[in-house]
Image 1 (cartoon, rainbow, N blue to C red):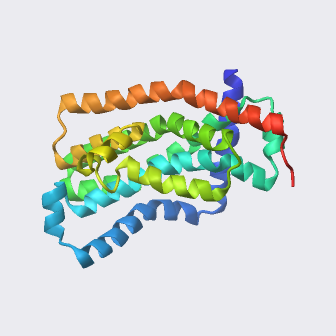
Image 2 (image 1 turned 45 degrees about the horizontal axis):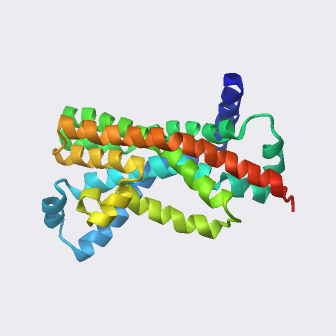
Length: 271
């Protein structure tokens, strides 16, 4: 069974990296995107606010905060986005009947999808977070930047079972079109707390956000940036994130199975 999973990973890697090799400008876009997000948000923010007030309220320069936020969004949602969209994509291009009929378990198929994108997320961190952190903080920034990148990848991994639960809910309990996912994605963006820190949210928002495993890692990264992360609190945040990952994993597996059974029972439309 392990060989089937490795086969699925290898197939996914060939598809993803072949596209990158064919469209080399995409690598440039991946490297530039966190900077573009940062500049865009800074231009809006500077037009209606004050940089010093931001530093006083958040505790770190807006350049670092929003560049790291852009990296986290690309890492977390970028890794899982294809996973969330894949059933609709397969149905659109007519490959869903072959996916359902494949001898590779559906769980292996969907677990393989994020893996190549984790390496892309790592590349994005090396070209965005690391240079800026070194520019601001020197050698200490290099070490802290690596920590941010690794924590960002960790947050991407623990987000996968949660997304599988979401997939099971939206695909397993009704017909779904792209509009539903376009409503869910902005909600997930807010709940992650990347752009609006969780610790500044109202209590209700904080509680709902706490159900998302990656939000705890995002908070740990943000507190690391502002220098308020002590060892005990870091252990608590990462421990809660890991515990949620463990809780959501069997539910995610069941969700994928639920979607598959529903598709088999109703039949797959090829038109």
